[in-house]
Image (cartoon, rainbow, N blue to C red):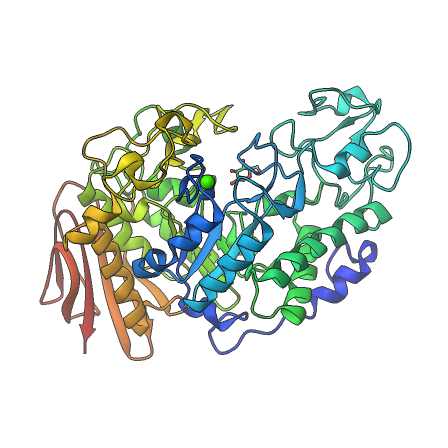
Length: 558
Ligand code: GLC
Ligand code: CA
């Protein structure tokens, strides 16, 4: 029995029904064993009707391209009806595609066309909150009791107002609601793990309103899975239950959904935005990613202060100055990996709509070293649209739809990673035929901006490099998502990082040196290896000779 069970008998039962792991391969749909995701920011991907905003038919038109990169699954950011105060993460109607993206029928068609090409389609599930424009909230905010009254967390006392704000237009209730992110994103009420008896507004998870919210989320999932979707990336997945310090109750909640989907939709996947795989995967998710708010990601790619528009501090492993503590990364990674490797997958995305692109402050050679590592690690790769052609982070573009965040870490200019995809050298980089001022965000103004059409023609382009890496990953069993991982050389403030990937008797050794200094490292266990893909690296008689900013992927010969 897990703690908290007496409160949530149904959830306890569900937690015991999760399928047991099969010989070394995480449970769940077998397509995950070879999955490589591509994240599509729909408003910026491809505009099919010339209104300046990317849309679903636009994504459908580009499925062959996505497949050509080597990706066989997509995650699309929220596409539902919304006032777009937070670029769609403020959902007003969970059952309807926003008109600017098309119709539910367009999504159905996208799924059909994707499936024809072996591509799975995951949607973004904003589980923790809604828009204040959502009908549920409008009802909840009325001053008379109704079935939605407790769907949100209403706190009567002023001292409980932490972060709570009245929404524009003011609600009729005298209480205040708790927001989940921006003030216009009221938190849905899944209940408190340990409600304070002195605060009766803190409802237990067994309250009928909390159960109704819980079941509504299932209904939303069912609706889109029935239409053709293959799963969900769950926004702020850890945020649903309040006062749950050890995550027992939220874990039970997600295992409840997972047990249901395993039974009813065994091919569907749940991907969490949690950034703590050791917790999220045992909580029922198939995939959790290491993102910018994880210490691990910071050690690898840079501190959060990178996001404030200022220069990066050279504290990450992937810095030419060479300051990062890769030992700390490997130790913590192994902690997550050991707990999760037979239960689910860790993903280290190339970037996303909240982080700067990896190109920021780096040249192409630097980014190749990053990709060489990210696309040879265990788990499921996620490529953020445009990263595969080396699109730039553009912190100077205007703030749009809640892109800029201002907080303790300074200003976070998320729009810099949300500019239109660059398809060609045509008008608006081939993104849209609309007048430039009507585009969702301005196109990278640089003359030398990369684009798909030009890179297609150049065998040495970043796009073709990404393709080569993914081809290697597909073809080499030791690089498969569930193949083993073993670090060989990872020293505090040292370079390079060397690790093995292993499948049966097949072994691949990877060495990455993002620093501007050359390094030589001798390996005990590997004597002979032949190069598969290298950048200024050689392997001779058990020694890696790594040039400045280099990497080597070698097949071990016994
Ligand atoms: C997640 C999303 C982010 C959004 C926030 C609130 O972190 O990735 O874009 O603003 O949740 O929903
Ligand atoms: Ca459009």
